[in-house]
Image (spheres, rainbow, N blue to C red):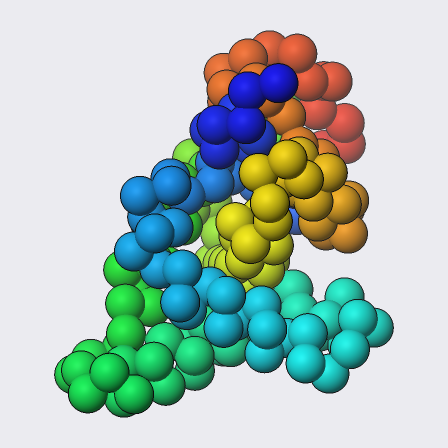
Length: 174
């Protein structure tokens, strides 16, 4: 099985929309491993129940906190790379909007308002920290488990193929 991150895409429902996210690359992970591992550890320090309940909600806040803490410890100015990592996560995310003709793909800024994006972003940060902090041999299992916890799925299909193979849009478009 090819465990290239781009072959383990996350699809999560968000109302009647779908969020399609491709994981960050190995290079981006290597640049951000300290803040991703610290984020996961900070979420889990209060136990598994807390992590599962609160993790997908607070992950972005924890990431920013951990990145700032890391920057301070390293005597660096700035946000510790949090904004760059969050921008990359956003870049790798597409919103699928239901239409009469099927799914329409739109960028995050056109498909979600600011508050909706905050919620989705936190779920994606949570997923990202789980995905990349897993051993390579367990990455698919961890990705499936994290996706399931978010009510979604993992697909190896690229966006266009997922749209072509996904069930028709149900319910009225919004």
